[in-house]
Length: 114
Image 1 (cartoon, rainbow, N blue to C red):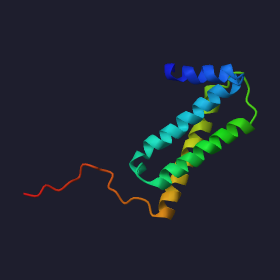
Image 2 (image 1 turned 180 degrees about the vertical axis):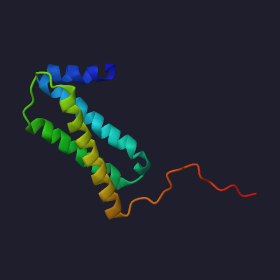
Image 3 (image 1 turned 135 degrees about the vertical axis):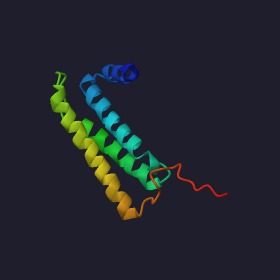
Image 4 (image 1 turned 90 degrees about the horizontal axis):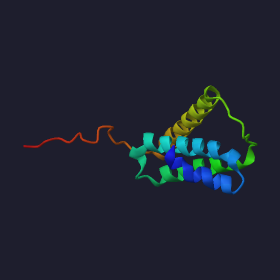
């Protein structure tokens, strides 16, 4: 939570404190999606897809009305999980469409030749 303080202060400084928590949630979901698909990091299409996700999150943050009131965690968690799941499915579809990587999940699987 300490790492989020600069972002909270920034939103408060510009009078948009209602956007701080949704912005942190959006950053968190995009970061988790990147972490879960980190093996695709060497592909340009992956970073382009993540950039589109980030831009879409910014657009939605600015478009939707947000409240300063507290929203219960049981309401927020399913929305965040649906967001994350949607991003992961889209990454999978883009990977299949573009031809993606055929790498093995186990990066340490090298044959030892004597």
